[in-house]
Length: 201
Image (cartoon, rainbow, N blue to C red; front, side):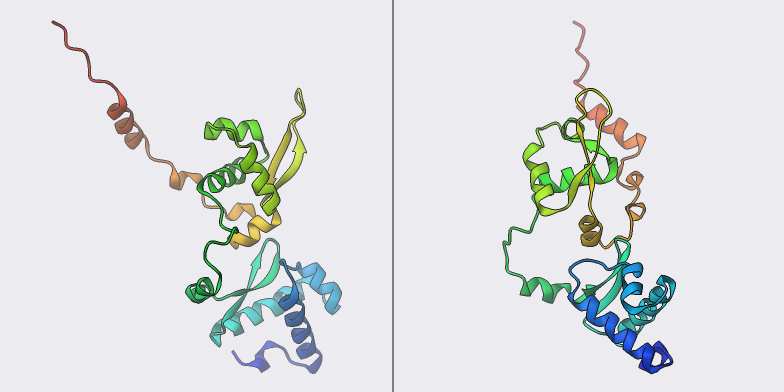
């Protein structure tokens, strides 16, 4: 795809350049509506320009890609260059989540809205500290209150969660069925845990 195929006019070229400039400095995905307001274009037209740019970047093997995530458009490093990006990033940064935090985040993602007590019941341990960490990192937030006694806070994932996973919406999460063992496997596992029958003298 050539630069000319991205749009016919000089005004179209200016819109593309403005779009690139905005996306370059944006810290989070920018919605078509926001971009449309800036560029004075209808959101569907913004989506079309972004799709053309994304195809152009891919075809010309740039070091970055334009992707739609969390309901908006964002520039990201090309996935096949992750090794170089990881080499650039200092090892041992605090941005890495612990296994406990990842497990808790997965529970919230699939069961939201969910309370701390419900998450703790699934994990079998207290999760107050881990939930606070996930809130501070911006991956989960309070989204509602339980109407029952005590009105416990209910939590869900944030836009940042979608952004980090490269998802446009929660509907793109892989089905849980893919990670649940079949009944035969569960039965075999349970049999292995059962004590041997006592011998009768």
